[in-house]
Length: 194
Image (tube, rainbow, N blue to C red; front, side):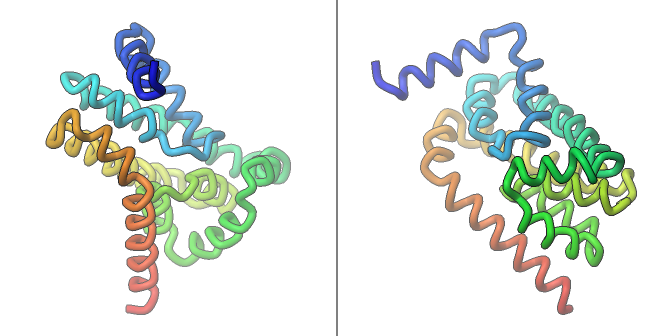
């Protein structure tokens, strides 16, 4: 049995499970808080298998992300000196965090939105926003808009390309992610100087 066949069987088992959406919710919440791994690695193949429920799948992923983001925001807000600093050390994102704190002070909404759209670990944004007393409503709006864009555009791409999506994603995920990051960084720089 090849590795590809094992992976396909795992995704089929996931899609047929009555608990798949609950698992996706919690996986998405974990991706927002503890796991600096792109949810799309599971989400794309799951969307390919669940094309009839693709909007529900994207919505559950968004809801899980938002739940995790609220939890992370409050860790930054109320517990930064203890749990927040441990979190940053655990994820080895000290440099990202320092840079993001400065960016948050200057362009908070845009910075949170860009981190939510790009493959930069979102833990940086939620901890900095909470610790920096960034307004929760603006944080949730920026985070929700960014991830809604990310997940629903992904759903549109999966619908448009159909079963070819998984192969394309596996082949081009890295270059696409870096392209989005470079584009987002360029946009942030342009907004700074214009």
